[in-house]
Image 1 (cartoon, rainbow, N blue to C red):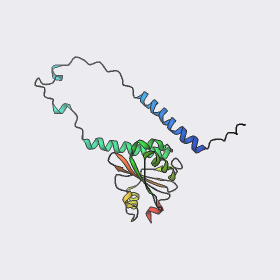
Image 2 (image 1 turned 135 degrees about the vertical axis):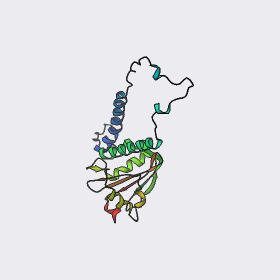
Image 3 (image 1 turned 60 degrees about the vertical axis):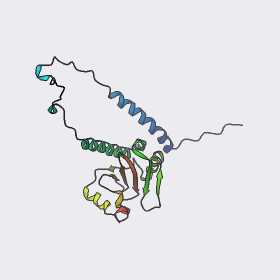
Image 4 (image 1 turned 180 degrees about the horizontal axis):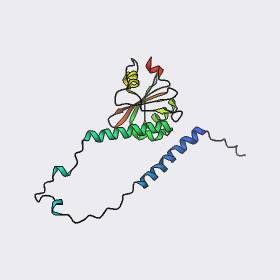
Length: 194
C-alpha cells in the first residue's frame, strides 16, 4: 500500500499545540528571573538594634499587614492575568484560575453548562480571544448598565472581571472564593443591555 499524502495542519490546531508550549517556556524564563539574590552582609548590631532580653518583639518593628490587602492584591493580579490571557488569545493561562467544574453561560442561548477547566477554557473561543482590542478597564457606568440587565445582571457583580472587545464581544469572570466559578459570554454587549 502506498502512504497517503499528509494534510497540512490547520492554524487553530497549531496554535492550540504551540500555546501551551509557549506558556511553559515563558514560565521557565520567568522562574529563572526570580532567582534569589545573594544576601547582603549584615553589620555588627549596635545596642539599639538588639531585641529586648525578655523575648518580646517591639510592634513598631514589624509592618502591619492587613489580610484584606493581600486578598485585594491577589484579586488584582488574577484580574490582570485573566485580562492579559483574553487579550492575547493565550486562554490556556486561564485554566489554573478555574474551579472544577466551572459554569459557562452564553447569552441568548440555552448554554448554561458545567465544564471541567480544560473544556471551559476551550469554550472561551466563543468570544474570539486575541481578536481585536479588549478593554477590561471599563467605566463604572458601563458596568452598572450590565448589572442592571433583567436577564443577565447576576453575571456582573462588583467583584467580576469584565471585558469587552472593540467589536462588542463581552466576557465576565465571576469569582467563587479564590477561583473563577462562572464564565459568562455574549457575542455582543447589546444582548446584555436590552
